[in-house]
View 1 (cartoon, rainbow, N blue to C red):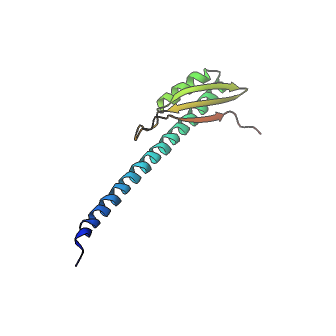
View 2 (view 1 turned 120 degrees about the vertical axis):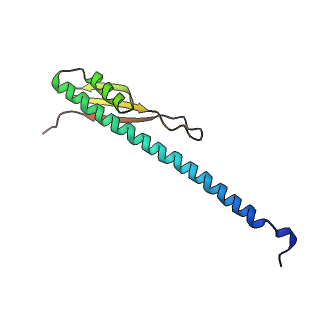
View 3 (view 1 turned 180 degrees about the horizontal axis):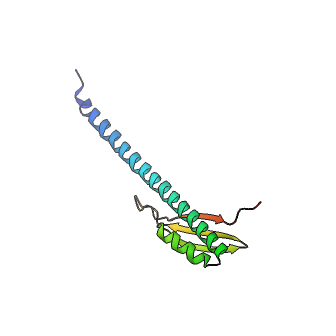
Length: 116
């Protein structure tokens, strides 16, 4: 027979464990969303750099092409520089806004003709 003052102890422990699991799940969700947004930014930067390098080779507007491709991939071009025949691009995507996160994520890429 249990002592009277121990009644409900398992309930408190169970509720505490559930709360901890919910908090852990929310934190992991934020991390997963940030990883996904960073990969989106990197993919947009890669594609924008390739478009800019192609525009350099074709005599077009490399930064304009890079900005258009970045926008089509959900990113915003923040930096575009041409170094010889290479295009160096930086883009930013909006990061997740869960649990107080406010940071945006960036991606950087460089593209140019193959050397060799």
